[in-house]
Length: 317
Image 1: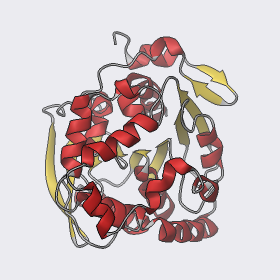
Image 2 (image 1 turned 30 degrees about the horizontal axis):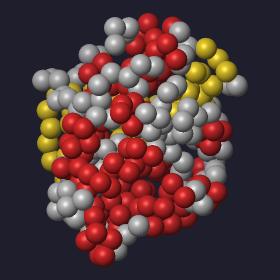
Image 3 (image 1 turned 60 degrees about the vertical axis):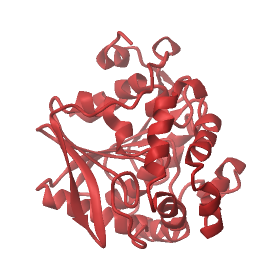
Image 4 (image 1 turned 180 degrees about the vertical axis):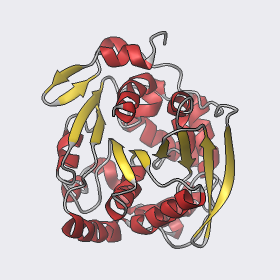
């Protein structure tokens, strides 16, 4: 990929109210998971009942990046490499995921958001721009709704919010069978077969499975094979969705639509333009962007396209 994110962003066109990155910029680079720049450090930070592994780098306005299932905070390295030049970049592994600890409870997204706020307090960071994907969107909404004065803007990538928008329609989608795939026997079936499980998500939810290479797949399979990781994903993160839906409806009834600017990004082989209308139901100022030749795994499939829309949005005054 020879074009910079700034060059790519100049080629955006407007279609049906959403920014669409043209196909000319959509040839994927290798999706290899790379180490973070040397300017990053990492530490285990105390949260309720455990710790979260948090990467921190750079100086300047703070940006918080939250990953989802099938990834860890490692997914953000291509974006972090750009942002760290003039931002403070904060990248936790979510509760029970990646290198974070594995508590049994506390997976409700409102609770996780309170832990994230506590992490920001420990770092003496008051306000952040927020960038999220998948389950990170759910924690991100809980953070923005509980602490709207701390989130200056929000980039949301390719997943709905429990209890809001079209959530209950989405639950009938056969591709989301894993939301109720949990329990001791399920975990026994998956043990030692984490790569097979993750391949299903990478293959079926991508535009081009080859864009997610074996190194990436092995990297995440190893992390999800850690003791407690699959248990915490299934019986922690997923099992909390019903409560998350109730909590989100209560938050929305109390706050109404979020006040901060929102950029809703969808892969053209996944949520596409619908993610903009999904977020417009919970936020008052929503722009949309469509990433071409991409499914759900936007940062693996089309990282430069994603950077090309995320960074200008974050940097816009």
